[in-house]
Length: 477
Image 1 (cartoon, rainbow, N blue to C red):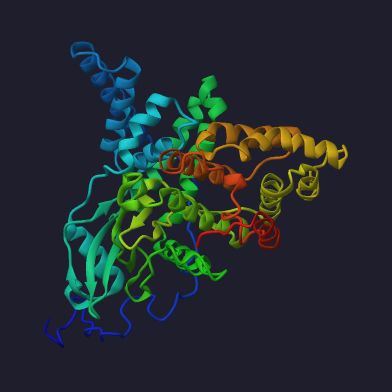
Image 2 (cartoon, helix red, strand yellow):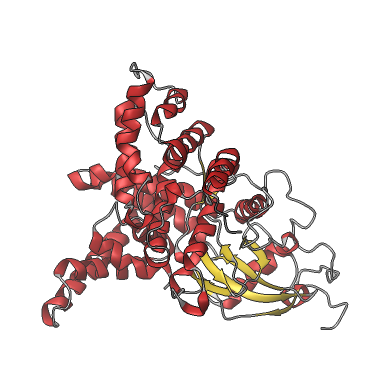
């Protein structure tokens, strides 16, 4: 590349190791603020979109059912209607793709046929033109593509509902990827979410949707989407999670891509490029790979994030959990991150300590009372029995037999017994265990998360050390 070429907007060519984008010298004040426009506003734009959404959904579902009537019936009419719904979601664009991904990720909360049909939306997301991606990057970072990168791949490596990823090489030779937000996505998704929220409220006329709390589902999607639209927030989360992995001096076999802040902006994240494959493409027994240890390492880091550090990865589907070519496990895409209140983290630590170490759920009572439950007027032993009845069987069984619907049912039962509400992040925690249950079924059959000292080595260091010394066994790295 020639030196001294001027940028498209009059900027001089950035030095090889000098500042590039707006975050090169650190995040400016307000960069991590998340705008949250009102969700319950419903104007002409939302009304028009609602009409379009209803028409598209009806048209695609009816067409799918009609096709089912004239073709060999390999599927039921319900499955045909579910696939028609997914076709409509894809046609309606990013907001509904994200809704489909949420449904696919929460099979215990939605009809099985619809959840299964939505699985294809986890990977098969349409891309947008590379010219638009280049324009967003150049506008955010203030320089032309050929001034910032040695090379830039116009064919995207992957696409998600709100962004897509392009490969590139930095001017110092490092291989990287750039995650670029879809142009104009913020306004479009806000209108869609407002229309969907009104529709969700109307659906509450039906018992199923009332029980499922459809407005709550759309509110969760709205909160996650508004946060995800701020790329600086996602990059900061990823950076902090990466640093926390090594907080205890181990976990060398787990990583997160390094964020290259010089090439980041409000809609752009540049990061280290990793080579590998999603865990659902790992074949047990191939290349003498210990797939059980692979799962245990990933869960260990994730549990430490939940119970020790605070922020945890809130979307560990297989596309975001990889086995790298060098044998490490990698967590990708920090668009969705949860963080439990400390009192609930303390309760979960107490629950896992009882399941792993002593079976004494009475000791959990102190953490229960710390939640401020007003009408809990029984003694600690009675509270312990309540907790043991609900969680003991779940935490002490093969994680491959743990069902997301059972865990969420237990959380709801817990709240009812104590007349308190559970934080949304606790349900997000349960959803991720649902992902790990799938990986464990395929790659670590017989593994019991709640009884594995390796997973809890840094969470209960003294207790686990005593247990290991008494049993005369060693833990893996």
